[in-house]
Length: 212
Image (cartoon, rainbow, N blue to C red; front, side, top):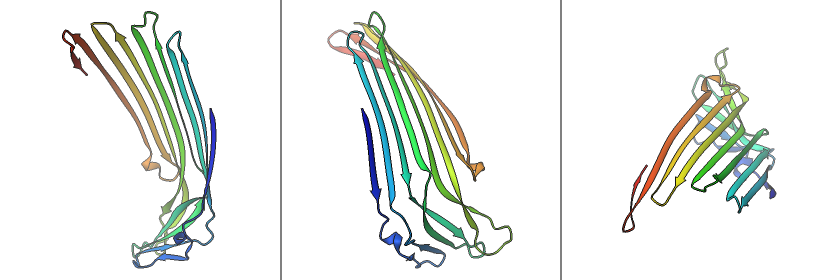
Protein backbone atom coordinates (compact mmCIF):
# COMPACT_ATOMS: atom_id res chain seq x y z
CA UNK A 1 0.00 0.00 0.00
CA UNK A 2 1.27 3.46 -0.90
CA UNK A 3 0.10 6.75 0.59
CA UNK A 4 1.05 10.31 -0.33
CA UNK A 5 -0.27 13.22 1.72
CA UNK A 6 0.29 16.96 1.57
CA UNK A 7 -0.79 19.82 3.80
CA UNK A 8 -0.33 23.56 3.53
CA UNK A 9 -0.27 25.81 6.62
CA UNK A 10 -0.53 29.59 6.62
CA UNK A 11 1.62 31.54 9.13
CA UNK A 12 -0.04 32.60 12.37
CA UNK A 13 -1.47 36.11 12.15
CA UNK A 14 0.61 37.07 15.18
CA UNK A 15 3.80 36.02 13.41
CA UNK A 16 2.99 38.29 10.47
CA UNK A 17 2.99 41.42 12.63
CA UNK A 18 6.04 43.65 12.35
CA UNK A 19 6.51 43.66 16.12
CA UNK A 20 5.16 40.83 18.28
CA UNK A 21 6.40 41.62 21.77
CA UNK A 22 8.43 44.49 23.20
CA UNK A 23 7.31 44.25 26.82
CA UNK A 24 10.76 42.98 27.82
CA UNK A 25 13.47 45.28 26.39
CA UNK A 26 16.02 42.49 26.77
CA UNK A 27 13.89 40.02 24.83
CA UNK A 28 12.31 41.67 21.78
CA UNK A 29 10.40 39.52 19.30
CA UNK A 30 9.70 40.64 15.74
CA UNK A 31 7.26 39.14 13.28
CA UNK A 32 7.72 38.94 9.54
CA UNK A 33 4.98 40.05 7.11
CA UNK A 34 6.88 38.30 4.29
CA UNK A 35 6.53 34.81 5.78
CA UNK A 36 5.34 32.26 3.24
CA UNK A 37 2.90 29.39 3.88
CA UNK A 38 4.63 26.12 4.74
CA UNK A 39 3.90 22.90 2.86
CA UNK A 40 4.34 19.48 4.42
CA UNK A 41 4.53 16.41 2.19
CA UNK A 42 4.54 12.84 3.51
CA UNK A 43 5.07 9.65 1.54
CA UNK A 44 4.42 6.24 3.13
CA UNK A 45 4.91 2.70 1.87
CA UNK A 46 3.47 -0.34 3.70
CA UNK A 47 3.97 -4.05 3.15
CA UNK A 48 2.43 -6.91 5.16
CA UNK A 49 2.36 -10.60 4.29
CA UNK A 50 1.41 -13.72 6.27
CA UNK A 51 2.18 -17.20 4.89
CA UNK A 52 -0.38 -19.45 6.49
CA UNK A 53 1.23 -22.77 5.56
CA UNK A 54 4.60 -21.93 7.11
CA UNK A 55 3.13 -19.45 9.67
CA UNK A 56 5.73 -16.90 8.67
CA UNK A 57 4.98 -13.20 8.64
CA UNK A 58 6.80 -10.16 7.33
CA UNK A 59 5.96 -6.50 7.80
CA UNK A 60 7.75 -3.45 6.42
CA UNK A 61 7.15 0.29 6.51
CA UNK A 62 8.95 3.22 4.88
CA UNK A 63 8.08 6.89 5.25
CA UNK A 64 9.53 10.20 4.08
CA UNK A 65 8.50 13.65 5.25
CA UNK A 66 9.64 16.99 3.83
CA UNK A 67 8.61 20.52 4.82
CA UNK A 68 8.97 23.52 2.52
CA UNK A 69 9.11 27.03 4.02
CA UNK A 70 9.30 25.99 7.67
CA UNK A 71 9.28 28.88 10.16
CA UNK A 72 12.43 29.23 12.29
CA UNK A 73 13.53 31.71 14.96
CA UNK A 74 16.66 33.70 14.20
CA UNK A 75 18.15 35.28 17.32
CA UNK A 76 20.71 38.04 17.69
CA UNK A 77 22.38 38.70 21.06
CA UNK A 78 23.63 42.06 22.34
CA UNK A 79 27.01 41.24 23.82
CA UNK A 80 26.96 44.42 25.94
CA UNK A 81 23.51 44.18 27.56
CA UNK A 82 22.76 40.45 27.23
CA UNK A 83 19.52 41.25 25.42
CA UNK A 84 18.32 39.42 22.35
CA UNK A 85 16.19 40.11 19.30
CA UNK A 86 14.25 37.28 17.70
CA UNK A 87 13.22 37.37 14.04
CA UNK A 88 11.06 34.83 12.21
CA UNK A 89 12.19 33.56 8.79
CA UNK A 90 11.33 30.80 6.34
CA UNK A 91 13.84 27.97 5.93
CA UNK A 92 14.06 24.89 3.76
CA UNK A 93 15.85 21.61 4.36
CA UNK A 94 13.77 20.08 7.17
CA UNK A 95 13.09 16.44 6.31
CA UNK A 96 13.11 12.98 7.82
CA UNK A 97 12.95 9.38 6.66
CA UNK A 98 12.32 6.25 8.67
CA UNK A 99 11.53 2.61 8.18
CA UNK A 100 11.31 -0.76 9.86
CA UNK A 101 11.31 -4.44 8.90
CA UNK A 102 9.84 -7.21 11.05
CA UNK A 103 10.14 -10.93 10.29
CA UNK A 104 8.73 -13.79 12.33
CA UNK A 105 9.13 -17.48 11.53
CA UNK A 106 8.72 -20.80 13.35
CA UNK A 107 11.14 -23.67 12.84
CA UNK A 108 10.08 -26.99 11.39
CA UNK A 109 8.63 -28.46 14.59
CA UNK A 110 6.84 -25.17 15.40
CA UNK A 111 8.16 -25.21 18.97
CA UNK A 112 10.95 -22.77 18.17
CA UNK A 113 10.18 -19.31 16.75
CA UNK A 114 12.48 -16.50 15.77
CA UNK A 115 11.56 -12.83 15.45
CA UNK A 116 13.78 -10.05 14.13
CA UNK A 117 12.97 -6.34 14.10
CA UNK A 118 15.14 -3.74 12.34
CA UNK A 119 14.54 0.00 12.27
CA UNK A 120 16.33 3.08 10.97
CA UNK A 121 15.67 6.80 10.85
CA UNK A 122 17.45 9.89 9.57
CA UNK A 123 16.53 13.57 9.77
CA UNK A 124 17.85 17.03 8.98
CA UNK A 125 16.72 19.94 11.17
CA UNK A 126 17.53 23.51 10.10
CA UNK A 127 18.03 26.19 12.74
CA UNK A 128 20.22 29.21 13.47
CA UNK A 129 23.37 29.38 15.57
CA UNK A 130 24.60 32.61 17.13
CA UNK A 131 28.21 33.48 16.41
CA UNK A 132 30.39 35.60 18.67
CA UNK A 133 31.35 39.02 17.34
CA UNK A 134 35.11 38.98 17.87
CA UNK A 135 35.30 42.72 17.29
CA UNK A 136 33.32 43.26 20.49
CA UNK A 137 30.17 45.30 21.02
CA UNK A 138 26.98 45.25 18.99
CA UNK A 139 24.88 42.22 18.20
CA UNK A 140 26.24 38.78 17.50
CA UNK A 141 25.44 37.30 14.11
CA UNK A 142 23.34 34.20 13.47
CA UNK A 143 24.20 31.66 10.82
CA UNK A 144 22.04 28.86 9.50
CA UNK A 145 23.03 25.44 10.80
CA UNK A 146 21.84 21.89 10.22
CA UNK A 147 21.56 19.10 12.76
CA UNK A 148 21.80 15.59 11.33
CA UNK A 149 20.22 12.81 13.39
CA UNK A 150 20.56 9.10 12.66
CA UNK A 151 19.21 6.14 14.63
CA UNK A 152 19.69 2.44 13.89
CA UNK A 153 18.23 -0.44 15.86
CA UNK A 154 18.17 -4.22 15.73
CA UNK A 155 16.26 -6.61 18.00
CA UNK A 156 16.34 -10.42 17.93
CA UNK A 157 14.00 -12.65 19.93
CA UNK A 158 13.95 -16.44 20.17
CA UNK A 159 11.14 -18.48 21.76
CA UNK A 160 10.69 -22.14 22.70
CA UNK A 161 7.27 -23.48 23.71
CA UNK A 162 6.12 -26.89 24.89
CA UNK A 163 3.32 -28.20 27.10
CA UNK A 164 5.41 -27.91 30.27
CA UNK A 165 7.09 -24.53 29.85
CA UNK A 166 8.11 -21.76 27.45
CA UNK A 167 11.34 -19.76 27.32
CA UNK A 168 12.15 -16.50 25.55
CA UNK A 169 15.55 -14.86 25.02
CA UNK A 170 16.10 -11.47 23.40
CA UNK A 171 18.85 -9.02 22.63
CA UNK A 172 18.96 -5.60 21.04
CA UNK A 173 21.45 -2.98 19.94
CA UNK A 174 20.77 0.68 19.17
CA UNK A 175 23.06 3.27 17.62
CA UNK A 176 22.41 7.01 17.69
CA UNK A 177 24.35 9.86 16.06
CA UNK A 178 23.65 13.61 16.26
CA UNK A 179 25.88 16.08 14.41
CA UNK A 180 25.60 19.84 13.93
CA UNK A 181 27.69 21.46 11.21
CA UNK A 182 28.26 24.59 13.35
CA UNK A 183 28.30 23.36 16.97
CA UNK A 184 30.64 20.41 16.69
CA UNK A 185 31.14 20.26 20.48
CA UNK A 186 27.49 19.24 20.82
CA UNK A 187 27.87 16.20 18.55
CA UNK A 188 26.87 12.94 20.19
CA UNK A 189 27.37 9.26 19.33
CA UNK A 190 25.93 6.50 21.53
CA UNK A 191 25.54 2.71 21.57
CA UNK A 192 22.99 0.88 23.73
CA UNK A 193 22.87 -2.86 24.29
CA UNK A 194 20.22 -4.91 26.08
CA UNK A 195 19.90 -8.64 26.78
CA UNK A 196 16.91 -10.24 28.46
CA UNK A 197 14.78 -13.29 28.84
CA UNK A 198 11.77 -14.77 30.57
CA UNK A 199 10.27 -18.17 31.25
CA UNK A 200 6.89 -19.61 32.26
CA UNK A 201 6.39 -23.03 33.86
CA UNK A 202 2.93 -24.58 33.77
CA UNK A 203 1.84 -26.28 37.00
CA UNK A 204 -1.19 -28.40 37.89
CA UNK A 205 -4.51 -26.80 38.81
CA UNK A 206 -4.02 -23.95 36.29
CA UNK A 207 -1.05 -22.54 38.20
CA UNK A 208 2.18 -21.34 36.65
CA UNK A 209 5.52 -19.83 37.59
CA UNK A 210 6.93 -16.87 35.69
CA UNK A 211 10.25 -15.03 35.69
CA UNK A 212 11.87 -12.27 33.67
